[in-house]
Length: 181
Figure (tube, helix red, strand yellow):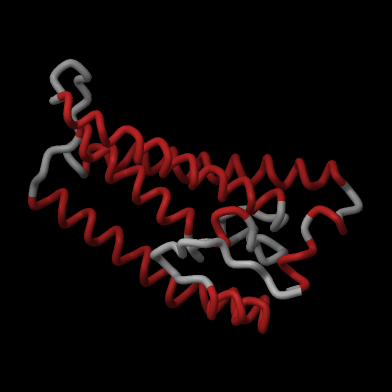
């Protein structure tokens, strides 16, 4: 897989790697920030740390880990892929490192895990909240299936096909996928 293996060894301008990684983090932070601004109200979050039942704080661990996975994946888009998570400035190299060796969409899986953790801590179950969650998950799945995957197939060809055959879309593998030499 020449695209995935290109990585750091073939980079001739380390300053450009830092620039694309920083741009990727900025784009990712803007996207996450937008959702942190919109979703709490839609999901019925109520921020009052002292009024939260103690058992709810157990969800802090998966929440923090989920968002950490998403942020690491955003970094990988810039550092390894030389692009951002935004469709306007996508990675130029196929990113098959880190969490991408376990699942094809770790940024989405991490974000959803983080949000569900926050929902357990701060949210209130309601029909509206479940509807918003279902609509958001459906929109992401449709976006991945009808836009992202065809675009990646077209851009990276056989390398992406091989990756798809070995790495599941949503549920992570137990062992990381090792790229063929």
